[in-house]
Image (tube, rainbow, N blue to C red; front, side, top):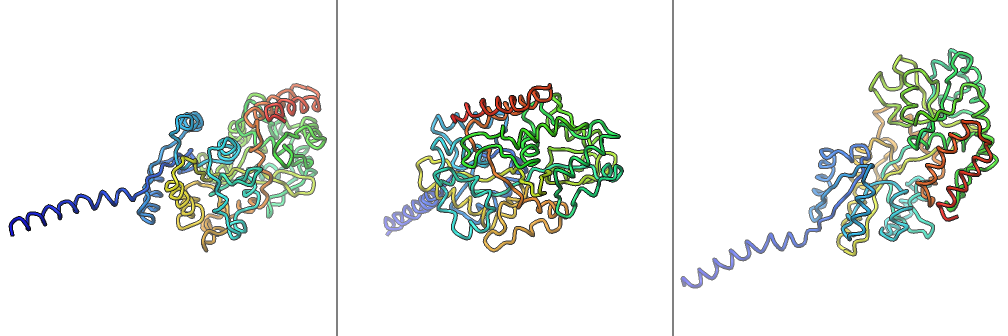
Amino acid sequence: MKKLLALMLVLVMVFAVAAPTASAADEVQITLWTYPIGQWGNQEAVDELIAGFEAANPGIKVEVQYLAYADGDDKVNTALEGGNAPDLIMEGPERLVANWGAKGYMVDLADMWDETDKAEIFESLQASCTDADGKVFEYPVCMIAHCMAVNVTRFEEAGVADVLDRETHTWTTEGFIKAVKALSETNPNVAAVYCSGQGGDQGTRVLVNNLYGGTFTNPEHTMYTANSPENVKALELLRSLDGINFDPAINGGEEIQLFRQGILDMAFCWNLIQQTNTDNNDAGLTNDGDVIEFMAFPAEDGNAKLGLGIWGFGIFDNGDAAKIEAAKTFIKYFADGEGTPAAIKASGFSPARSMAEGQDLTQLFADDPITTEYMKLLPMGGDYYQVVPGWAEARTAWWNMLQQIGEGADIQAAADEFVAVANAAAGA
């Protein structure tokens, strides 16, 4: 009898030890590496997000590593070369699609997009997250429309506020010219075509493309087209207008400071984050209290195509089916599920889709009038050409071209040189 009791006790002890071990064996652990996309770069905020996910998916545990833009790409590339890539990564298509996806490192997520998803995700974003072969290497979560800003108080004082449609946040090239001419009568620094480096270069590119309907690349994203007659005409206009100065001493961030200080009447480097900034005054006001209005870039017909910032998740193919499936569960939760509203709010940007599993994301910021108003710009999103090959070289060649034009170079020749350098980098 004693032997039987002893045997039973041993068995109980064995099962007590073995049970949690078996449970742990069923648990899938995945890693997420994220660039500093709003609060997705803040450990406390991300811990809260991950806790919500793990509570809803108890069989999955997530470890997070935070990347900086200064050396994040190097860390990812080193991990890829060493076979130690993370399971998930959060960033934009220029990295996930045009870089690591094009090199064969990413998992195709096309099976995650059904017809409902395609109807809910903005069309321009779908194209941006898909390569030429139809493979989806990024599932978008949030986005921003890059725009410009004007000092409405100065426009009113100059008698040209009527060129602005403040309801739709649009205006025309003709209205832009009229405003610059009027404003330059009292301010020799109406606006700056900043070109000290690539910081904020999306503003100058989109300005040039919109003025007369030019494009930066071909639709296939295989070659650069910035030397088109439309773009050359736009560059000629900018250089000819008194009050518009090509400035090789500043970048986009420094342009914003000059605009807030009232030195410039317009800013070409602007977005929602800038419009809601309260560092030196209330949101929507310059340091001195002048009214700031965010605007689409001027276009001949008033229908601008804005540059976009897109952020979402991709999965590295590490050859582990269980981890890939767990990573897809993670993406579904934060990009089209229960955790989507929190994920978007943490980013500080706008939703990449209209609905997420029955949740109306268009009302996500209903208590924030500035963000709600800003969402009027999202349907104006243009081509996301940052996925073209040779992108890094093209960005450098762009500000070099602007500097040459500001110094008096022949505009067509400078644009031709830009395209030659950029297309050589693209292999076109």
